[in-house]
Image 1: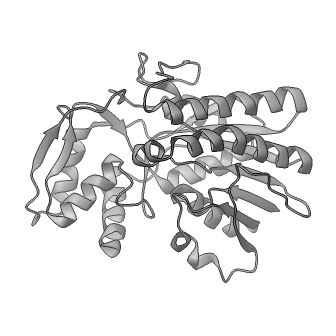
Image 2: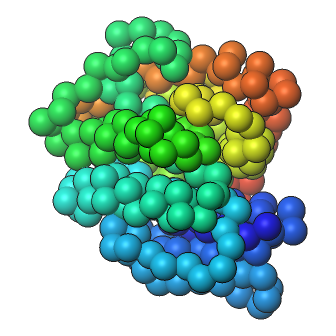
Length: 311
């Protein structure tokens, strides 16, 4: 099989490139390197089944020959990135998704969209199920990302209903692991960078907002299984084990007992979700009892060792 992965040099995309190569696929990795990095795929370069194309998927993409699968993972995904690049974020959610769907349509390929838990906004329903429509501020600073993904879901379903494209939608909850960027602004790499440098931990608000962290290997397993189903509606993938940001800070501190880091508090950013936890019952039923296998203590240990090597 031949699989195209947009955003393939990014955090999750590079792990997907690895997985599909391991499954015997040829992989075309497409990335403009706005937030991805070639070091994430450097170890794949010598595989003759792997091809890297530096290309912005917001512009049309031509691929000669057959394509079995198109996975659209191209997008800035952290607040630091999409607040710095709001227009490219909107473009890749709209134009980029359109172009990736067009490729899947022409090639009669399966299509999988990387959506996000951010489509739920600051949720009024907990935990979040796929039938919840969300509580999103469309004109707030986070709207460029939230609404880009909501539009991407809408056009994906339109291509499925109108053109018969074999589409899948994964709503990704907080995911972590090797190849995250220390400076990407998300809470877990921020904490790990701070503890390794001995800097104060930056906790927003009182630290009582919650997140649910899924290790990247577990996410990739769920994505791979979802692609080969016949289910077209959104599916949550994440870890339902909920933890407060303050509890997470203490767990990361405990990994480096010699660190002199302390905790400092800052005001909450606008529209920052107060609670985030997926209902994964749909995924468990659909994906042969899929569920997280890597517990948080082990995942945090692996991730910290990766970041040590990046310091």
